[in-house]
Length: 251
Ligand SMILES: C[S@@+](CC[C@H](N)C(=O)[O-])C[C@H]1O[C@@H](n2cnc3c(N)ncnc32)[C@H](O)[C@@H]1O
Image (cartoon, rainbow, N blue to C red; front, side, top):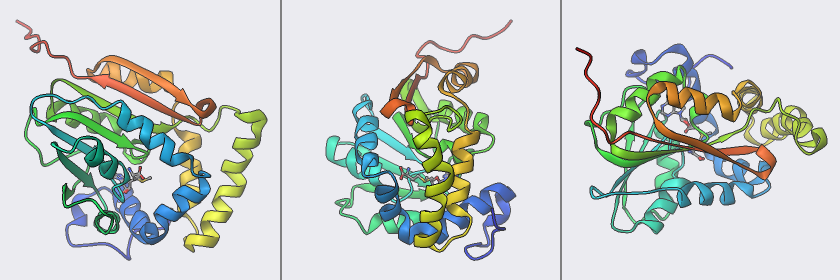
């Protein structure tokens, strides 16, 4: 990844070097992000996000948070499916959020620039938290998991949509060839960002498989962890709950 610079702001000093780079990179490609998403996934991303939103469960406080919300496609769908809920969107990149706010979101989305590892929300705020293609960028994931547990209501649900590990051969290796060779070239030509789409391919290749993510979530303190593969395991939908039992106190 190229070092951060073009989109750095005076609050960036709080972010790690990795987060500054990720923020700058998404800021640089924000204009092209939606088009490339639909084009490079051959339109499958619409279906993937629909599946994510169909997993959402809410409760009495009617608040849902979409983390790493980007250009707000998930929030838009949430606001259509849950018209009487408050939909919050958090992302590192203001540029991504600003592009999203140009969409017809009916003024129902509450955006905030925030790092998934230090979220500006009170304990027990949300019935459900979604993350679509965001967790792969967060390092270390354990800090995001503990923030999510803190702000979920007891019994609340976390739904993560993420690529599977690109190391597993899919469709006889056609998908893997597409991921390593075709996607970075097309992404570079269209977005004119040399590194963004090689970064995408390499984060997918380095991302753990679904069993490992399930175990990570369990170790972080979630209960009822599970996952479903979609499109032969190109993506996975992970779900986990915050226990509604009061925490045990060691005496
Ligand atoms: C691949 S995009 C996904 C955007 C959107 N969720 C979607 O489905 O299209 C990843 C997003 O994660 C955001 N992001 C990366 N690291 C983050 C972090 N630590 N905290 C919050 N957002 C982060 C990026 O700014 C970017 O908008």
